[in-house]
Image (cartoon, rainbow, N blue to C red):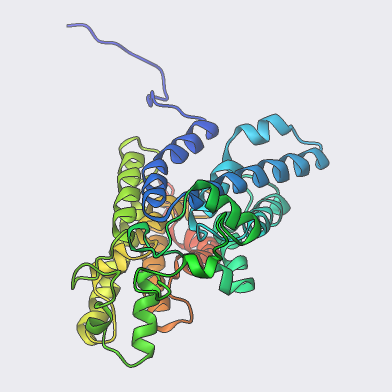
Length: 352
């Protein structure tokens, strides 16, 4: 019998930062394709604008800081931030919106703190929150699913609306938001929130055309979530991310949504509704797993993810915004030093 010996470390799969970032970018592709299929070319355009802005901003600041520009851009961290932010924006949001958000994410949240590895907050989520608070109307201008739209649009229409506010044939963004019933289409989370505030029960809100089942499954949005789930499973299989944060976040959402729905079934969403009608799946695998702004211990990651899931459902249910991933992530980013302090593993030979 022969044995093959090798020196430590014995982990043969070694990836540098740029490889990890690229793999996450690749994992976003199924979700981006699904978003494009259901909501049109706007998502691709927004991501492209975000990438251009991120690269220019990162290069300029690195040059001013006398850092290696090619190395800074080559780690793909700025490009990944741009992709994640572009995914979160309404497809036909004006061009300046994505430029402002991306600039803030890269220049203020990332580079002002010292660059990759030093930022306390998730850059994409802070950029998103800044835009949501500053420009709430533009950030809520989501389109109906293409098959439910009164006025379909193509790539050139999307480009024109983003650049000028009007399509090639003169339709405004407000007109493109109309569904086949000539009513402005809301996202599933907006539809439920508006209905509940209007005195409807949760079951009654599910009669909106966007929903396809009594479980809260929504046409288009649920399919997009499943596409990002496929990308998330790919990241887990490739060991790009560990399971602690995404699984604990989903667990936090399931437990919190389940308890609230049991206590007040007519006033709170079901578990499937919370999981597949917003950005929970995307957030669990692509946002919460940020290695820089998240917890660094296994116990800490479980706590970090679970509390984000809890806060997401609580803010959605009782807060002022229909979706809450970004707010929950930023709140927990603040708590990371405390979580890490109390969850550090005990050194061998030392008493707790």
